[in-house]
Length: 324
Image (cartoon, rainbow, N blue to C red; front, side):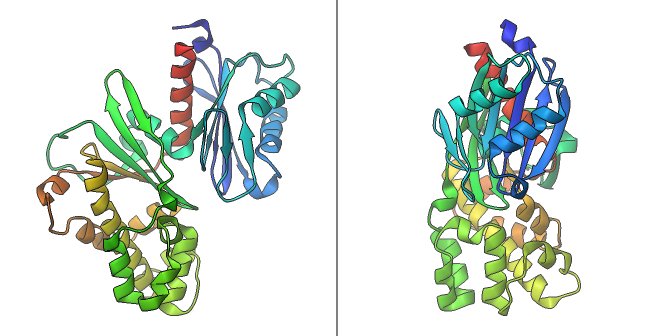
């Protein structure tokens, strides 16, 4: 272990709606955690400066890592749903400007779903809710994180003893699988044309658009889920979304063979699967088909730990520091 690995680090999880920032000591303890609404700031750097002013104890950092809900390269990132740009140099410069003793550490960028992938080995039973248990011991070391909230993405994870390997993606911008498109067209006819990518359907705005297509009223997902038991239209929309989610995840089994489980994150996924619509998800996911015995082996879980992305970001950064 290097000297840097014992010093505190700063980690951030920048989602489509909120930004979380944490100061973590060398033993992995979160000494300070804050959540900020993105609408309150013009950039991530303004939120970072607010955190540093509110927590003057932030000194002697070994490094910083920002997980971003959008495309990430080795030195830059872009938030998908707003004009927030990130670069390693700008993050280091802001830390150097604001910290009392400057900043001489390392900076990394990471996709937010990849951060959740790195978090999986560190999540206990209290950080995961089981939707469907695994029928047998996992046949491989592969898992899949599915983020369904403000936007959509996945992270493919190999949980190896010598370190977690995470493959990044931007699957939300890919087209819908034929099986999902067929369900939409059977139910909506020509209105299905509005859902031209995975994220246009499987996201908060997608759930509202599905409501508009089915009922004529675009209701936001939170209201649909809250009204599930009392409103027939809300129940029909949420049930259909759950069926579509199950159909999509059925396809993911063939894409990724995730015998270590499919783990959902994001407000829409948690909301839909918290209702009795979970039964519609399970029926679509477990439907008969090629390799149906394989699908029966795969657990489905919901990530319930609100700081999971921060845990994964810190784990990733510590490993990067140890290798540098």
